Length: 252
Image (cartoon, rainbow, N blue to C red; front, side, top):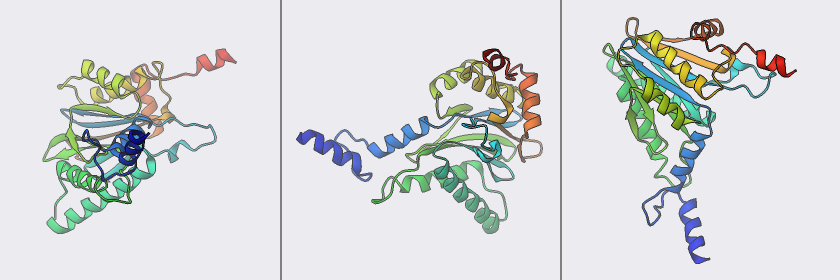
C-alpha cells in the first residue's frame, strides 16, 4: 500500500523524478500524442512535404475546421498530433518568434532556431509546479538558405531532425513504411506520393480528400503552400489512392 502511495506521488508531480529517473507526466503527454491522428513529414531534394490524417468524426462537421497543418512563416509549416488546443498555443508562440526575429534582425528565422525556441518553451513546462506538459508533438518543416529541414518536437522539450517521420497514432507502422520506402533523391511529387501512400497503408489502402491535409514548402519559391480539396483529390487519383466509396454503397 505504501509503495502504491509513493507511486501516486511521483505520478502527480511534474517536477518530481521517480526513483528510476522518470517524469511520469511527460510520459503521459507522449501517450496523448499517440492518441492523436497521424501527421507525416518528408524531406526531399526539392523541399518539404507535410501530410496529415484529419478524420472527420461526423458528416455535420465542417472538415475545414479540423486544423492540423499551420503556416508559421512564409518559409515554415507545422503539422501537429495530439491535443489540438495545445498545438494552437505552441503554433501561436512559434509565429510570435518568427515576427520577433524578423523585426530584430531583419531576416527570416532559421527552421532549426525556431524549433529550438519552441522546444525550450515546451521544456519549461516540465520544470514548473502547477503546470502540465504540452500533450502534442509538432513536425516543423521549412527551407533554410536553400536547404530543406525537417524537425520534430517532443513533449519533453527535445528537438530531433529527420529525413522523414510520423507522429501520432500508428506511428510504429508509419515509420516502418517510411524507412522502407524513403528515397533521398525523390522530388517534391515523390515526397507527396510517399506521404499519401504511408497514410493509406494504415487506412485500408485508400483516402478521402476531405480527410487529408497536405502542404509543401519548396526550395525554388521558399514559400508555404497548403493544398485545397481539388488538388488533394488530384494527387490521390494520380497515386491510385482515392476512396471512391464503392464499399459503402455495397454495404447499403
